Amino acid sequence: MEFRLINSKFSMNRIHLPDLSSSDNNKINNIICSYPSNIKKYKKYDNRHEEKPKFYYKISEKGPTLLKNILQERGWEEYIENESPWWNLWWQGKRYRKIDYESCKNYQRLNHISLPRNTWITKKDALFRLLRMLKGSYGSCYNFFPKTFILPTEYLSFIRYYSEDQEKKNNNIWICKPTDLSRGRGIFIIKSLNELTYNNRIVLQKYIRDPLLISGYKFDLRCYVMIKGTYPLNIYLYEEGLARFATNKYNTDDITNVFSHLTNTSINKLSPELNSTKEKVGPGCKWSLKKLRNYFKENNINFEIIWNKIKAIIILTLLPAIYETKDDNSQCFELFGFDIIIDNSLKPWLLEVNLSPALNNDCYIDSIVKTALLNDVVNLLEVENSESLKLAQKDINEYNINNKYGNKLKSIPVNSSRIILNKKENKKKIHVSEDKEEIGNFKKIFPFNIVTKNMFPKEQLRTNYMHTMIKEIKKKYLNQSHKIESSPNSTSKNKFKD
Image 1 (tube, rainbow, N blue to C red):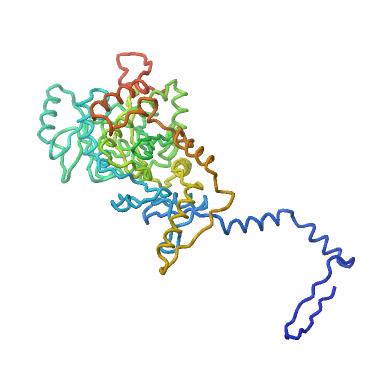
Image 2 (cartoon, rainbow, N blue to C red; image 1 turned 90 degrees about the horizontal axis):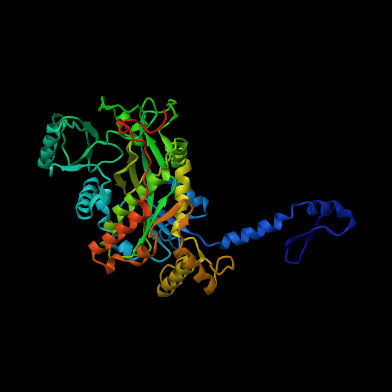
């Protein structure tokens, strides 16, 4: 095979390639024909990839690393100030400024709702003060939290109650929780008033001393709840979640053993027994809710009855907190962590509500549950669509026109036939989105019928609204009960077969 270099009159060398059609070059033809046919497709994909519109995220330094990884796997890119054309998701631990909410566009999402009263349910003292008020107004449907005192403000009230208890020889145990700390820090348990010492504001609660146990180990549930907008209010409950175990067997004789009484992962990951194979619980300190459901089923306990009661607790806690909002928060959402404990009579109790539940991977179960959770959170935001991209591009175009002599923002083509919907398709998409009852493992628990969908807080007096909602919640979620065999010691016996 011969390659010839020819001098041109411009003194430039040109390479004359051999004629591939000649009989001398059949071998080359055969080699080229043997290449995979998808080579051309790959090149086409490359061209499309260059023009593919992007979604961008802003996540604070302390934001969940897992979320960043998930978004990048979905093709998102990190937002860079003055370089990226727009952002679609902003996620941070603290609340946003008023101007951030006001300037949020339809194609953007903020991970906190604009709601002053939101802190009422995510601060321990404010939560239980609110629940006590609601119990006084609406009765026994709010009987899902322990007797609570907030010290030092209610110290005298506590002393009176404690004295009456002593006269009745009830011998209750009390758990003390600092209002400004999380992850189990600063929590201690007392049996006597002499043991009560505190320097800061605390929540003092009657200890649930007969929790449901699995092979002698105490556990609670971390339930993930997402609010998407507030007017109308949409509440979604994640069907998967975590059961968090103490790593020492439950024993009220030793109230100083935090590994026996506290289920916080941050506490129990320091336990010497963390990786030991505990009877039925196994190594570690977490189960998925799927595994817990199966365990209940094996022991002939209907978990769905408990789960419906938990749904009622969630709705009854959120409704009054949302009532005062003045904004629709259509571009905002909130992911809560509801902590629930089940007692030996199979009654669920609310322990606390977490504003920013931990999304880090402490173990394999975390990775499985939280990866799926965050993917479903992104899906539920419904921002990865052509309508969002068209709105973003329109913003960029208007900015560049108005900023004729300044720096132009980068424009990304969105006229590809792959992403543009016509008006008819777009209407259909929006209609489906509004009626979505579930996305992934998120299932809508409110509104759930015509009455709850059509009755809005802004149009009703609070008392009328709450009475109507409570009536509907009772019919939907609280009309079932467990069939438990009665016995003289039924409150002290564990329901599971150990």
